[in-house]
Length: 445
Figure (tube, one colour):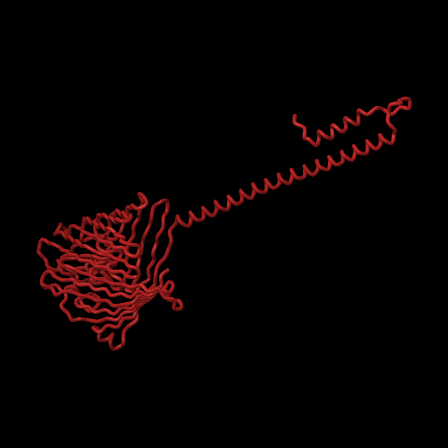
């Protein structure tokens, strides 16, 4: 058993006191009584000091134990707080987030007599909802749009990450083709959008590798987002994407419902791009795309189609430059030179085969003008030429500026076009050069 030093000192003192000789009158060797009393008093004082030191030591030990207990409790509380915050962060990361937009539009159209007389019109554009997030490592992305005249899904897919840069997507996903996410900077996209070659979505499976410097996308689409030629929808033109809906017979009107329905099926698509970084201020993406699929009629296969493109997307400081050259071709058993397409609740017509070219420039200028924090100045040019059936060429030039102000983004576009949808013409038309001034104001949340 271990005896504390102070306690040992006290015991030694007591023992020494007990060993003093008893006072006897006959003991001539005993010291005087006064000397013995002084010695006892000194020892008692020493014992009192030792007891005081022992009490102080006990108090110090008790305080240290209390502090250790409080520290342990504090660590437990802090650990619980950290765990709670981590769980809250995980809950925030692992969940579905809701966003969207609401947009309004003003347009002045010189090809519309009534619109000119009224000095333009203001319309409600869209309200949309976006869903995005992850649950148990499964990613969800979806967007639904409501217009005054229809509602339509843009995309809806589930994704799974195989690694830091690889993902598989299944559902309604974007066709990997050309400059992405858009081959344009303005509200109207490029002419490729109206051919189904820009920001177009079909139903299938897509693999995406997005690791620098390579970007590889491989996809297989069973049919368009409307279910193909016999999809279970009330109107195949109620679509965000432009889809082939039929084969135009000789003499059939540009905007008529096609007498011979058709739809794409079993399409394979690939896009490969490589990004160069010559210096810190410059990035240059070069890429190539291709797709091939079948055309289905109401009861049998009626042909096939294909498209390919090369593109460039360069960023230097505040500048962005895009260029693209593409060719597409629909080959039907009947040798048709025109096809019916549909989107935004109406039918239109495109050439069965054509070449397309785009060249776009944008300059971003940060500013501090009240709520306005950025200006995007751009000029986007598109041309569709060498059309089948000797159809006239299409061109569209959009000069504009995009204004960022908090959650508001506004396009100011001045559009000049010929045979361009939404600019007074059609891809299969033979019209005049038309003009449109357009303002699209959107609140994004």
